[in-house]
Image (cartoon, rainbow, N blue to C red):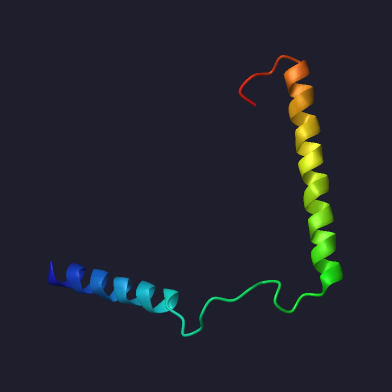
Length: 66
């Protein structure tokens, strides 16, 4: 029992130490160029349009709960 308790305590400590960093919150777009952000937004809108078209096609085919 003692080995199990110590093992779990050690594992929990390791998980807590790995998850805690000294840095604060950061922004992924902080150092990105505006053209890269614009390209990402364009790709996102394109993907959303494709998803919408797929859902509309499924609805026309009578597929529910899509």
